Length: 264
Image (cartoon, rainbow, N blue to C red):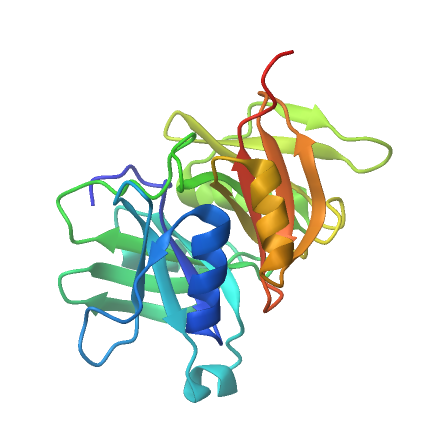
């Protein structure tokens, strides 16, 4: 893939219930998640927007994965120029390697890693000559925001700056003693923010991703109707959009972002 080093390029749902997860997210976000894998011997189901762009994939967890500690979760892939060099830098800066670098034919080279605060993610150099479109600041059905709730914001930000060249040029003071909401800039784009864990109701430590739906009120109602929970919102955020923080029926946290209310 031709995406710049440090940019998010793929989103992945690990699930114990592929059928239920498809039903839930297709209804809430408006996706079309494949009912089965397109690759023999590998159960990996593609997630597509209404417009046909791929946002990521859904991987049903196997017994072996669960015995190794895997749990339902949303993860993302950060594009890098060199997976092996980046993995080495991650360990040198206090991070860890869950899956050492490996190749997937015709897909790319990947490693699963974690930052020094134990928040997991993937790094990847994709084999496709085309850029990923999974991240787009206002793309419908795509990830619009990447948010890290961390136990050590200062150390975490320094880690991501060292590894991916991220900067944190702007911040928003949060109420009371909640600290600052610090915006992430990667390759000239604002892609999300970091904050201290425990600030957002219902949000655990780690990365959380906000996907765009056309109607935030309808998305909140659908989350509840489909067996999920809405932990916060709908509420307006800077820039005029409205969001919810939610969890799916398996307890996996995610966010939804939608357009704000029209002016009266």
